[in-house]
Image (cartoon, rainbow, N blue to C red; front, side, top):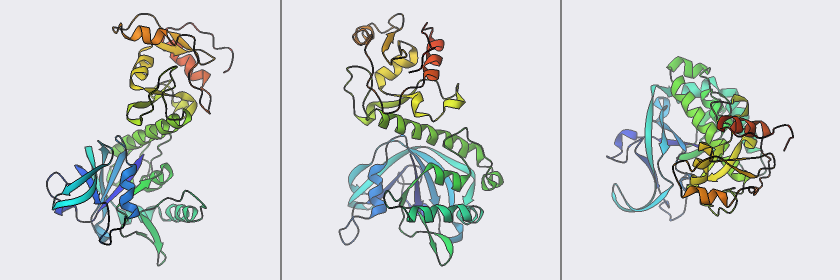
Length: 318
């Protein structure tokens, strides 16, 4: 998932609390109540992409992006002393070669952002808390919108990149400020995250390998059957994914097992340097995986068979 952090005064943040190190917020306001854009912190997961919007008024700009290195954690002390805070650790900060001025982004994408705002406002459920509003006839930042979710559609509107397909830097804004390379890499990451999120949900957020009980999101992977780089046509397709724990994901990647047309486990040859793995896999041989709501792509499975030398028949659809 992708998020937007707004930091009005980034230069005033203390050591180890700076943009790209982490982001944080109080858990309650001065009246002892929670604030929606602070509560959003609890939804962040390790691996999520975070964009940074820094500065005030006409100088506000998208300056770069980071990767969440942790889920949200609770603290009892902050940079100014004892305080109840939310905090998310960050890593891999990448600054844009030139900041993307918010006023330029709003100007270039005015019509699309207005339409997106109206569409969201008219939803009967699942409304997004957007970082901007339409006020006095203008697209403007919403004061207090510290951390907000950025959907794939909003990502495309803001930066001209599409997380669902091979990204480009065709946006007028991105072209002018030469941030296209960074944004393209971010779009690829966000697209993979969206794919993983959909795949995990398809299997009820549990490892689909027969007999595996792992359901903790920290130990689950939305694995590609046919690799992202090898099959552009299948990118983002939930049918090209398996929800697996870390061990079974690696075993599938190495070809220690595959799935036949009926989604049953078929073992590969050898122990792959891990004799302890073979007995675990043998117990599941011939058994079907946990069924998802969306079936598996036979095209993707056939690619996995070819890649790892499985002689299986692909003539009958799943």
